[in-house]
Length: 176
Image (cartoon, rainbow, N blue to C red; front, top):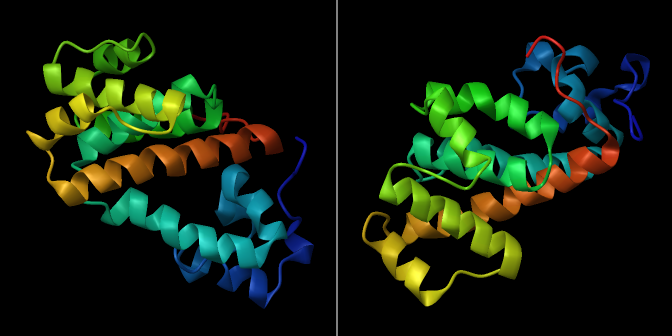
């Protein structure tokens, strides 16, 4: 691992406070932060700023959970982020995606027209950093303005996270 989690003996009050947006007080520590958040403990100011945004995307976004997880899984696959993929595999199932639907994400395929449109949107944003007018208009048939904004920011936010996790060398939890 290029950037390992901050060792437990180096955690202090500032480090623990940086995780308040995501972790309950009892697990604001090296073990509770886990392999993905552990390296962020090395930079509490960045962690605190980033987690506010990240928590919004994961827990308060206006996107339906199924659409959010389909989006994240496509980003994880395209970016080769094993940790994101493993972590959101369970979240995707909890949000109603079947294992067959999740497998199809790796091929950019979906039986459902709207799911296929979401995958197309992810691919366009990742490839060109913008959506075509056609995709934006098609999304508007099912998603309101705020949801489309949240979709764009979810793609960008999870691309950012994939870049960080891949660069730091974070691997999936062995028990996943």
